[in-house]
Length: 250
Image (cartoon, rainbow, N blue to C red; front, side):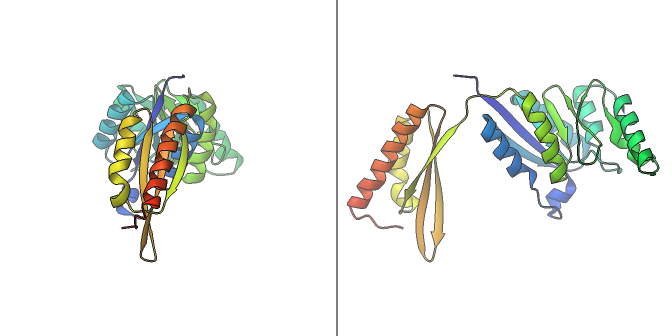
């Protein structure tokens, strides 16, 4: 079986924490990582404060195979991600010659001034590699196991599309859902016993409620098809047994 590959995410921005901007990147990254066999294990949302960004980046890049960040690589004074990542790696943050030339030519072709603010988007840690941005030109960057991308969802998604083919992936986590007409109070004990008998699986319980009735979606996850089926069969048998005993929903 291939190694398990893990990832984490740091979402950067006061606007996320204030609720002014609703994040759309976490869910997209989670879906993409699951699809390619990388386990997204942790997400942190941090303010536009250098100490907080550096602390989160250094903690998570040491713990997981990959770290993705979004936000804070634009042209304004509060876009401090490039400076923060540089500090986390202990290298200078400087204009990248390739990014500078590319952006200068782009703005010239559009008849727009290449202002000091726009030049900021060509800054990145020394030694970083570009992440192409087919939407608005200004690149993200990659240093070590950290991938730094824009917060605008369309740009983030386009950048991620360019990153995915370069990533090492692991064995995909398979999943199957068992519908259960009972609430968690009814199935909690037996479900815990099944989980103990199948430590190589992850069994999740997701309560639902509608029109005064509770029911539960039981999701079994495993990397091995055999382990998945063994646990699924026990979960399904448990639900059938409770049904036969005329147990009622909570």
